[in-house]
Length: 63
Image (cartoon, rainbow, N blue to C red; front, top):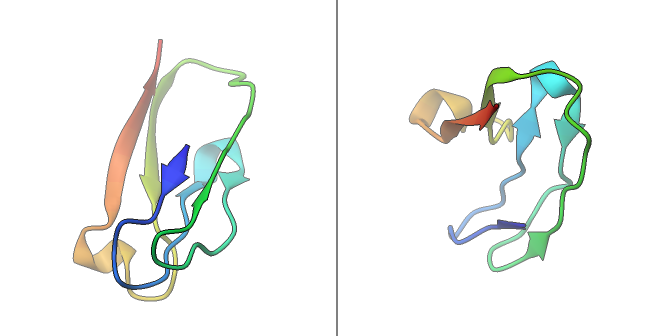
């Protein structure tokens, strides 16, 4: 479940896994389901213009 708790639009993208959400307006949420094909650490970001550079990012760990 991805929830936008910010006051600006965001999305969530895991580029290495080819997974992304649609644009989420403030308070909107969506469910992302996917089958991981490999283990590892994968960066995720809000790749809405300007956000990765300001720290809207994290790490998904699949073991």
